[in-house]
Structure formats: structure tokens, C-alpha cells
Length: 499
Picture 1 (tube, one colour):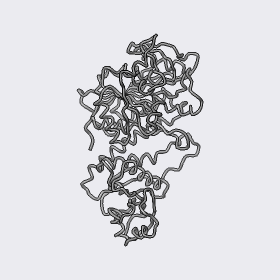
Picture 2 (picture 1 turned 120 degrees about the horizontal axis):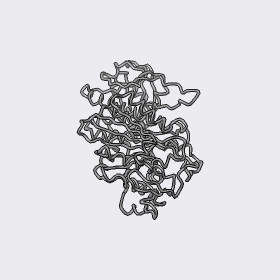
Picture 3 (picture 1 turned 45 degrees about the vertical axis):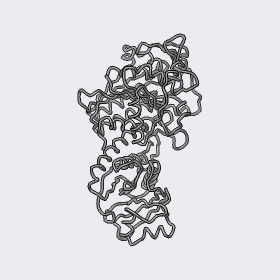
Picture 4 (picture 1 turned 120 degrees about the vertical axis):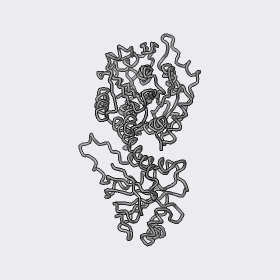
């Protein structure tokens, strides 16, 4: 899908469809008033006769209006508020996108960027609009024998009356497209079935991505390499599977040689049965999404390359499959991590932290400026925060604030949970240095406490995306691509590359 900036008098612009918002219970203003004047009051007449009132989400498609060069004009209600919030603005754009996706136009001119959105400048709301439109047009049907028909619409033109807005708009298009490319990749990897998307498949995809982008370097460590490094914790998870584990490293050097890299670490459990501590069968198919932390790392690196950010970035993916078998790790087994700390595995379904802890120890060698791990780690996070907000914990308050701020700007929010020392005691083990679970209370916090034992050498944050990485159940089931926007915004901020 192609996005471009368009200037000029709206009534003179030739297009398949011109999209204009009108507000509820007020006279026509802005682009709507401009078009109404050009067509002799036909938009005002539609409002007067009750065909559309401006109520949020209402739509009316008009064809062949006199004095207007566009073949169609799509009116869409923006509601009563003088300023829209992010959610209302997204819903407005989603509604327009859905109408255009099902319609016959091959291109469309959108004037929605002229609407005021609380706390957002032209760059920010335009980027949000691009990302929302791309999200609306995403399709995953590669395993269906009958494919969904491709939308006829191929081009979006984002209109602005002032040519001086061109730089901000074009920057928003570049960033919005790059982030959307990353989100699409993350969603597709997450939606792939577990018999396709294995650790080996992820390693091949990483190498394929590096072939497309000369700026990327990729290294894949196999189980022999990890054993030599002493990654007994990570390897304990893949013990029961015929699929070998992989540790994948992306490196992108867009900054200066003296800049410390930022490091992202993704949990890549390509299918999680729970191992010997096997999960209930209901909805176990959704455990293919247990690699969405890894998928988000793929998406972020793709977005960063697309924007050519002036930053150094290392991305690590700890990929394994958690299966029960005669060789699987058993509850009560004790394993030795790369850090030398021993771990009593009380529950083999608490495996994400076992792969992450060795990857986090491995991250030390890059002398990182910051480390953020991303994982579908705990069901307790879903209980605490639901499906709208990611959990955030860490050992550095400044890093926490940067990530929270990035989440607000990207409309991909996180919420900080405490990491007090008192919680660490729940991980005490009589037989090893640490247990891999801390009991039924504060499960998200004790999981982060476990990871914190391996992150003392650098500023570290943990994003628990168990509630936000995918939509569960029903016809809308699927990966969301979160938290790619949050993480990419964080890196944009660190690179000083925002508009």
C-alpha cells in the first residue's frame, strides 16, 4: 500500500474517494465546509435531511457531486468533542479504512489529519493514522485454499492545506510505514502455526531478513554453541522437543562506533505445551503465540532499518519449543544457568524465564546502554491489566519512565508494577540458588524478580505482553503486533530522530 502527501484545493483533486469528517450538532467546518461550498450546499442538505448527523462512526457515501473532481465523497462522523482522544481518532480512521477496504475506489484522499487530537501535533496524529490504516488492511490467509479478495484500494493520499506541513507529513509517512511494516511482520510470525514456525524457521527468517537489508548482521547459535556457553537453563526447556533451540542475534549499527548499543531480548517459545507441567487442552492452540516477544523483536529491527535510525541496536531471540517427553525436564530438576546460578524447576510451564535468563546474561557482552526483554510471560499479567496494557518492571527508574512515555506517544501503553525486595523471598529454594516460580501471589512480579537476578550489570526493563500480544478466541483471534510501536518509539527517542 502506497502513502503520499497531497496539497491543493480539495474540490479540484481527482481521486476515487475523498474522505471528510463532520462533527455532531455543529455546522460544517474545515474541509467539509470547503467542499459544501464547492458543491452548492449538498453536504449541508444531507445533514439537514437526516442522512448523517456527525455522530461518531456514522458514514455516508456520496457519488458524483457537482463541482467536486473526486468520484466519491465519504462523510464520516467525528462526534461532539472539540478534540478527539487517541481511541476515538483510531476508531474514526478504522471506520474509514473498513469502508474503503470494501469499496470500489483504487485510491483515496484523506483529510482526517486536519482534526484536532488531544496532545498530538500534525506529525504524531498523521503517523497514528497511517499505522491504524495499515492495521485495518492487514490480512493473514496464506493457509486458506480460497484467498480473501485483495482490496481494490492501493493508494492513500494524506491531504494538508499548507505546503509548509510537507516535512512533518513526509516524516510521519516514513515512520508510520516502517513501524507498520514491523507490526505486519510481527503479526504474521505470531499467526503462523507451531508446525511451521519453529526455532529453525525463525533462524531462517532472520537470515532472510539480513539478506534483504545489508545494514543487518545475523548470527545463529545452535544447541552445541549454547552448551559450550553454559546455557543450561535455556537448553532445559528444549530437552523434551525434537525441535532444537536457537539463539538468534541481530546487530544494526546505525550510530557511531562509540555509542553503546540498546539491546532487545525476545522470548521465542514457538509452542508451549507446558512441558511435564502440561497445560489444560482448552485454547492450547493459542500457545503458538508464546513466541510473540520474539516476533516483536523481528518487527522492531525491521522498523529500525526501514527508518535508518542513527542508533546501535542488538536484538536477541531465545527460541525453543516446550514439549513433554521422556527427555523433558521434570519438576524438581535443578539446572545451571549461564550466570552460574542454579535453578530449581518447580514448574516446567514457567519456561519463558528459563530461556530469557540465559539470553539476558549473554546480553552483558555487548556492554549495553539499556536492555529490554519482551515476553508473553505470565497469565497473572492478564488478570492484573487485562488485554489493553502491557506490564512493565525493571531496575532503572529512568529507563522505566522513557518506556512509559514512549508507550503514551505510540498509543501502545504499559503500566509499571513494583519490584520490591520483599517479593524476592518468594523465589527461595532449599536446594538451589533460586526457584523458577514464587507461588500463586504476584506472579507477574515474582517472574520479573527471577529475571532481575540476571540483569544487575546494566539498566534493564521487562515488558510482560501476555495480555496484549494477541486477541484471544473467536473470529478476530490473531496477533496484534504489540509492543512494536512502543519499542520503536523508545528507540526513536533515544536516537533523537523524532519530528
